Image (cartoon, rainbow, N blue to C red; front, side, top):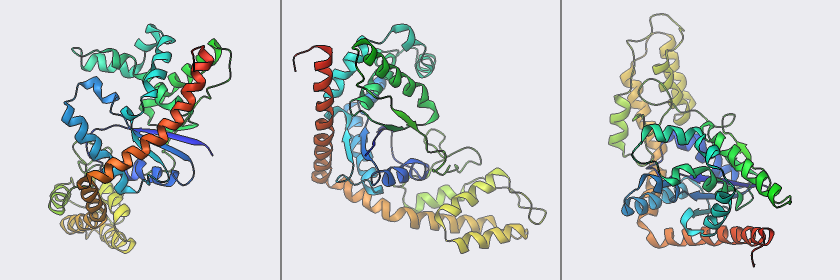
Length: 328
């Protein structure tokens, strides 16, 4: 069975875009692959977060992924910092990484431009830590966005370089796995683009009914169609895309017919959409809140994930030490 690994950045709550974009795919993958999902708390240190923010974000992300359907009995879901073997492999890859190639990484150059007062070594060596996260489990596939493709190529580079230096065929080159052909692009509520945290146009899975209603009622619309069956402009199409995801087909068809007949009342459509989004999110929201309150369960899940991931990592590291020439 092929191994899949994915890192989860501890950067706030999951929204509908995350759910339909990646999380649903992760839930399906755990039945088809040997999956490792980790919360990348070491990576977050490049921004110097407060200790309580790290703890809170880790608990939040763990609870939300569990509530969405990640099964700790099927997949290893763990906190990155619980698997100490990653750091040793990170050290070995850093010894074989060169300053010039790390400085040329696009994400590093962007960080240098955006945060000139915090250009730390962790930012520079982000690709080697990512490579260690992946190769410690000798992963076959890694679900990534287009923005991470260069870092994936660096991981493949470090795998090839290790094999060449030590004259072995040990590390396989991990394959990037893109969701583009199976995941749904969920639009935001601001009339353009996709839903995202930084864009401020997201509906979060933990939003309560009043918050959801307020956000949807403020969604961008226009004055309405002027001709039957005319093409929907992007802000209106966005609302229909959301409705297609969370509403019954009859509901979608009703408002679509109203639009095509130039009889659409956006206020009515928004009220229905808000109610349907709440109906969709409510069971997930209740699970998230219940899991967040169960500290013992979260601790057991994290411990189980760490045990699975550590066993896999220790096997790799033991073999790597032997290849390099260290005492095993």
